[in-house]
Length: 368
Ligand SMILES: [Mg+2]
Image (cartoon, rainbow, N blue to C red):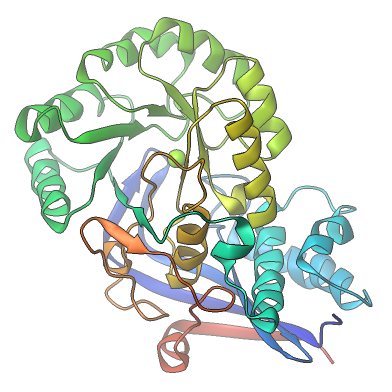
């Protein structure tokens, strides 16, 4: 199909509570959305980039700039655009995976809507619902953490992930285990905050039976993760380090991870995310779906992805009210710890015009 145009929307959504990780605290989600318009309809995509380059090198202003000046013009110049052609059409531009992923997601949504097929079906879904975990930020105190974790368990979340950093690791994990017991599925995420010299501290997490330690070391330190894996019993999971199916294959081969967190934006889109899933499945490596403080758009696509057979661990596919009082789509509501996989064409959800308008700060139209 030939694209008529692409709209870039900046939105600003307050979070229900500040979300603190080892790289900083967020209380508002600055977000870039992409709407592609074709002769037969439209499609929506979202960019995972945050306001600053603190999770990865990408950030919202940079993503908008590269989309406006390079990526969108490349697609508008093409006579035939399909979701599978987006990555080859953009391959001349290095990096910027989250920006590329947003564009590909919107094209895929438009294409699937035109064909009456859901994301889940197109990606290879085998389930109608997915079990949901929740990511719990770093708190000011252990009692505050226990209150928050208790609240999420009451809501039905089937797995708890604690964000950790040096000085906030062993004690919060111990406290959660002591209060809520050994049966709670529990894991931790360091977002690159440690070095290999911290191996003895991380080994002190071993007695708590965690599902995994996520991305303890620098994103480029693949051999460091492999060495750490020999020094701790808790399985190592990589997030920031995995930017493609190829990097997943490398990390697995080098023994740097036993589990992989798949975030479509980080790897350049849902089609590459599917390939990461396939590589991991071929190696017997479990995967789960991460999140980037998603709105309903990203949530819908992530829940579809998480319903593929290799996603054997609960993801950070939490309900809309985990982060937002009001989502921009119809809200995703947790039921018995699960979210239903959308079945409608494309994402199966779309922004509610009034809700989107209320949080949109700027719009740019590119095209005819
Ligand atoms: Mg992570």
